[in-house]
Length: 448
Image (tube, rainbow, N blue to C red; front, top):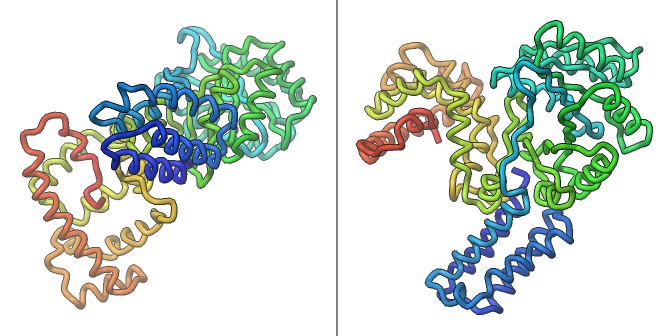
């Protein structure tokens, strides 16, 4: 995730705080100095950091805190609360008109921010909520943008309205609105042109669109990887267009991610969604409290559960749960669990949401290694998949050859499989009779 380095540094600071039985004001100041450096290195706006540290310090140096039984934990609690406040405290939903009216959403942003892909992701989300979106292709300067929007719209099962590159964007929008009315589309999402940098022509074009149709929501798509530039872009767009909210993209990338912590404080505009991957399903509602929890290495179990519920078939999950509880699964089930893990964003995504599973920045999880495991299982016969005990040395050699791997890889997978079975037997004993765990138990990949 974008905050891996920041998370690692903050966890080191907090580890030192927790290790002290009593805290002095100097201890708190020294710890917050480290927090300040970590935030600045993550490219968080200097003024925002200064105010943040000041607020936490005022709260954390009172006598009731320093004399409490767990002063270190209390300081961490304040850091968490102020991080949530920084990002907006409350979750802000996209404001939609009633279903019998057309909601017009204008999407804007610089070229390369991922705007066109984000539009398709948003359309898919709205479709899941029972809306009938129509996408309007108004980027007339880049023919590839129209084609990209059409391809992504097709993948999401969402229609795209286009008049090519010869018409004015404001005319396209008016025609698209008429088309939406005629075809009972109750959300019109406008894909506008981006530029490599902010210029007057682009802003005038966006103002022209707003003058020709009632835009209910103006959303700005910004690339989190651009750090402070993302904050400056947001300020410039807001001054000209009075934006309603932001969508941060590429928050899953290897970046400093400070934009997420600065942008609300600087612009006063809420972050509505976060792009956490390249797939069309990788657009998450932005929850400030959950993001703060991830940054501090406390995980994000609620989002993990929501992903599991959205991506995994309930009947399959129940069936799998029965098998897991009895440790009666085979390699077909192993394969099914891997596919489910992929749907949820891969192993690295799942681990990032589990408390205490934040990995050091120098450790990488290669999700592509799962393809090797798939190849090994697909090289097995039906009998071998359902009865792994029949796999002898000659069968292992054949499987390795078929998968294009060394026999040691096959041995490793079989060993992991057997260990997984043992672990599930132990876990099923611990989980039996415990309420609240049922359901998710069958959804979590046992290969983890």
